[in-house]
Figure: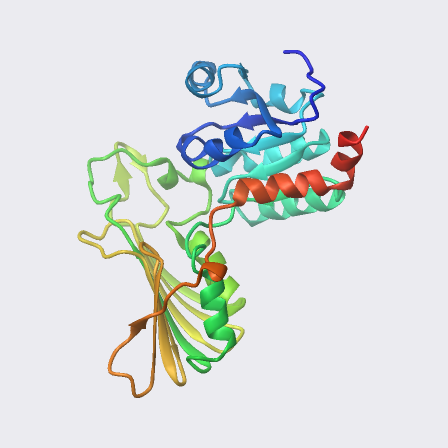
Length: 319
């Protein structure tokens, strides 16, 4: 692999699974200012296969430290499960690379705090966690409705994220059910908390109950809950009931309800349809999403723009 002084942002991918293939790779390949030069997946064979099928000019490597050690890389793009996030992120920053890391952030709070501390030690480098796609399309619309006090002061929040993904008791454990791979991440709890706090402010108090319906899968002892119910308080005074499940047959789509002193708002995360109603209305009605408020997936573009605007990269690009 030879260095190409073509003024492109050179990326090394660590972890090339389905999310990278389906969500990140298309946008990266479309960007003329980007070159993906190396890939390290879970095995060398899978790295070769990924490059052969998607990036024939990229070099497959056996281990992620080989990618981090490449001197002419600008960015490390992490698409692994959470158990690798902290080690790869910190190593990449120490090697002078910008870092994009797939969610969930880490195995636990201690690792997350180590990652944050490392990012602060290298303020000239851009670090970014992949944001949740849920609610992205109508994010600004929801913020506008709440800011304009259309439903009054929120006092009751209800979120349901229910699936039947883990209903089969004979299925082997999914990697998200394996704590040594996924860490202390439960169902879709973390990803929706990020959405809720963006709209309603920080959560200041929590009480939760959980249950494991199928504690043994193929001889593996599962300790990550199949069901989780959270009662919480928001800093704005609202009380929340958040329900998560991976074992609900015929489950409806993910849905949020916010009840205020003068009205209500609902968000269907499957369709991105927002409905509102005020006291005296006969029913909720759909709110049209104006084009100027419509959000879209621009995660890759936003990260690359931040990297290009950083003082370090600006210096390199103008040499």
